[in-house]
Length: 394
Image (cartoon, rainbow, N blue to C red; front, top):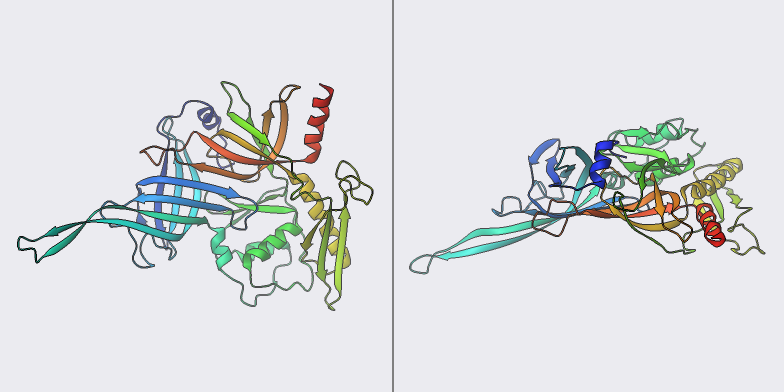
């Protein structure tokens, strides 16, 4: 979570007044546009994307000074970043929402035409406009910075992650993530981000961008719980929708790689109990997920398969669509507790946030955040089975 503050939690659950989004533009370490007049915005995160955070920001440009012409202009996609901060209107609490790389800029300009007395002279004067910006989190820079015939030099996975990102972003590792050796004979492709993801998957870890532009490495099951979403007059939960689907649900993992002598390597792991048990005669059947391991030994791919399957079980496989009051401190991979109403009373469901969207309110004050936000909370099959049994009992 970006900010752990009881005052902030209380403000989220209470009545907000004049909350706003503060946006500055930077280029090459220099502030190039301060206090942009934002008229509309949307920030969205999705753990299923390599570049998890994507944003759209519309900036008022009444004088035409901000509309970019060249890639070196302040709001051009030539390396400019947006520094975005949520500011409380009640207490002044500031919650940094990270640094966002501008990927596209679409200016819309309007002009007034003035003619001379004899009609021969025409002058065009800007009469208002705006610039629509599409921006990504700094993982976009990692994805764009391709590897060029690089070889492994650090002895451990997290050491390699730090080395691969040394000139791009700082790396902060959660203390529960355990480092391990880099497999012998590992060779990279050209994707720097894929190399990072491979190392983190091997360590049972995931990533997200932090508030100061750092890459945070976390356990695949998430961290927390950091917040409880309860309903009622004093709660923050607006609604919960569940839609059970077998899409993306697996009961086995198959990891593949290649040995130093070129021989193929295959490792397997299966669930042996529960409603998703693996087997020909089981109800769910055989549904494996495949993973390209970085290991180069049989024991390595066997361990990788076990890690992949255990990570998916710990991280959850069934998604709940949750609408709640907007909390600017919440991040991907934060664990939350949702008090969902059932016929047998409220049921506490703990899960991991895998997607979230916050946006501006529909008003003239475009920087004002909407009071509600959308979350996707991923929960374990076992948690839902426990609730199902409780509901059946009544």
